[in-house]
Length: 123
Image (cartoon, rainbow, N blue to C red; front, side):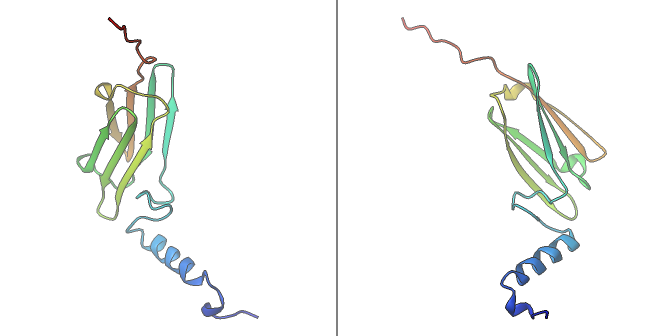
């Protein structure tokens, strides 16, 4: 026997998530701003870190990138949603070395890794 929504404490939550996914107009999933089908891949190479983000429907002019050496922040706007993702980098990087390209909804960011911490001579 199927109960009504009042018998299912999660019914309203699942209905709301489904409604949001069907509309595709706002953040869905973990609240990071990225929808459930969008992801960011991080590749750590010998001397660089490369990030690849899927930003469907976004124009290049709608993308803003910031890096503080430890975290890359990707902010982007499309007519239907906003993206705001902070990606913790697996190694410290030289944020001034960053370069980015954007083609067909795919953002690729490359940044040079910094070497080990420098020793400081005491005089």
